[in-house]
Length: 305
Length: 251
Image 1 (cartoon, each protein chain N blue to C red):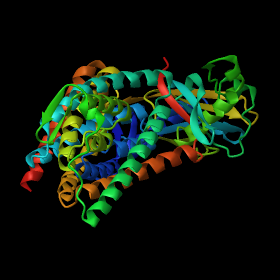
Image 2: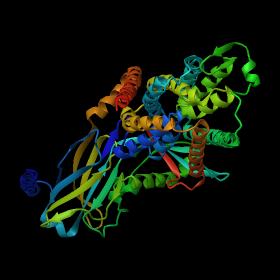
Image 3: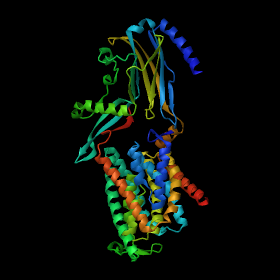
Image 4: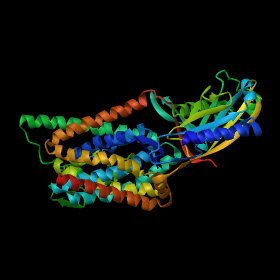
């Protein structure tokens, strides 16, 4: 069954969209990621204009992560103070990102920029997480216990605050900067930013994995709210028909994912997420190396009259 | 009911042919509305020709969609990586859809002066572009890209002989519009030409393709009230996420 997407301007199969939503929703609930890093490239592959894919995905991630966030909040897995500090940077970053995308659209290089950003970030984050989770699984098997967290120089910066929930006493500057960076990427890449936030919170801020996922969802909820509104307002690229259809699958998937998560240990979750990130990166690299079926892009950007 | 109308219409046409023109045609559905569930539509052209002319003439039907501004960018391999080239061509009046068919599979004479003059056939269509002179010399390259793009999406239909003829006077041709077909005015031209490609008679119809239903409303709202659209999109998503969460808590 085909349905016409009014903003994207093309018809698309309803069931493919809902299935895509289900798979990505499962990952969202399980790993505390919005799943946009998987969904956005898929949507672009299906022929949806990159700018519409990015903006509609922000709207879809919002709904999926509200549902995931509430589930984590009930399990008391959220550090609200840390979430608020991250948001100070995140909301501002999201607004910067929308205007950056507007600029990239005007010079026609948004697709290249989006692809390269994905590849660089996914490879970097994926291999880092993989290496770390493997070594920590080995350590646990040997019977050694990790320190609560490593104290690095970043934590010694001024404006220190006590984060009770995360058992931390660190400067607010690193979380604000991380929030800002993730906010920008969130807007221009159509991601929640969880796949950067989660490792950043674990390895840079030193937060415990169980709290990290709920807290990253808190940040994602607010940042995607801002980017949905700003994308609609500035670029008019949010397709609500598209995001609603993805959502039907996603809400179901997210609930299943959240339940599955409780069954796994922190380093196991990180190991699986790392594998998924590396697979997506490989597909994206393949896409720019393999000769395309159509070695051109055609955009209709205005009706002549 | 449709068949009945069709028969009535043919009777009208036959009378019309004898009385006035050697060729007459009519589009059955001249107001096509793209609904939210749109997955393509058909333009059905009916007509009649003067039976005396049947043996020596060829019917050509073309459908020209609304003119669009298009940007064509090539992908090129730099250091082993496929990137979108910075060079691009801008067509200022590319047809959003083009179809041509004739009644004779041997008809190949698209070089006839009449056809060239009237822009009949894809290669005779005038499509202008604005860009540097350098790009204009590559116009054929970009035009060919456009052709492949349209063909892959069924926006360009070139049939040798898909016109059905009954009794040497009535004809019918069906054209498929794909789901991505642009909205606007479609011109249906029916030409009757001789074997050399010179015009005997012609007839013109118009078809209006519009967007409709919820889709159009959303599109308009997103353009006119961008901020509110975004606000509602965000609130709707939060609400849906909340409802889903509540529903699943109880299961």
